[in-house]
Length: 381
Image 1 (tube, rainbow, N blue to C red):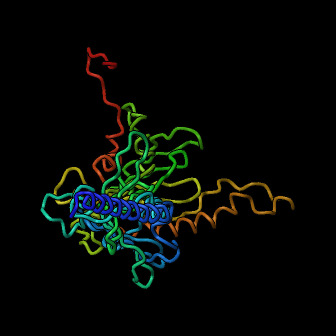
Image 2 (cartoon, rainbow, N blue to C red):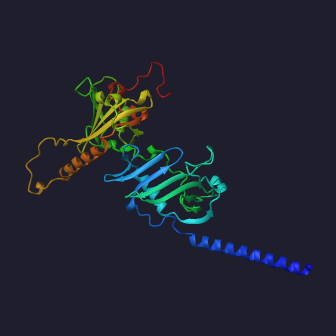
């Protein structure tokens, strides 16, 4: 073959190869362009979701919709933190595709997209798997959340792989801080009682029927005073405030097995603190024993009741205008119903609380006393 002919053939082969390359690249670019901005999960309706599973090497979280609302089904059906649930579902609904890549072993490892159960080695980083099912247990979505994309500023998105596909997608939302532990999804805030709404606090111990101490506000907006027992020592106002604020943003760490023996928790012989609000709501708090001998966790029960507030001395006969029920009288049935609903939510559980929360539940009146300064010491030092 002449050298000229050979050169022509080589040039032709190169041109055909280049043309094929650019055609393939063009098709891939067209495919990427058609996917860009598309929702990763089509028609994900909140009302159709019946269960969500979040699986990782740390834990498996099982969330389920029930007639009473969303619960952590593998935590005794304890109520879910609905704010976290709404945030997660909202992100998944709005996931938009930025770029896509074919799956390769190298990419799965580098982007941390191996399933939690099939990592190639024990120390390989793995994904968080989210499985969404409808109310009939049909799978609506099955995603592996890998590594967050690094960005110089702001969110860089997240690498995601649908479990049934050989595609990796870079999406516009980030899941860097997704909660992976079961107890992270529990609605841990049990009460949020404004201390200013507490009229009286009564503390009891098992060996006495009468309160060991009573704190009372002389009137609304006035500071609470120790009215029983009477002490010659100075009362520590800060300690009284600690007692009154004990139910403000009151959160628990966990819940015990509902079938736990009450004797193991100490609740059956517990001391009791009653918080009576001006609207008639009464919180009864029962601090129990330490959990498994630990000094940083304690058992606790709490219930809510309603007792109609005392109306005081009788007023003069009402005029025709005053025959109408007052706003306070109208609010009484609401307060009673609210207390009943509240008790239905909080009373069935035996909670586990921190030692910090536990220490604010004081039943020893001596704990309310101010510490006496030693002679010759500067109290400000």
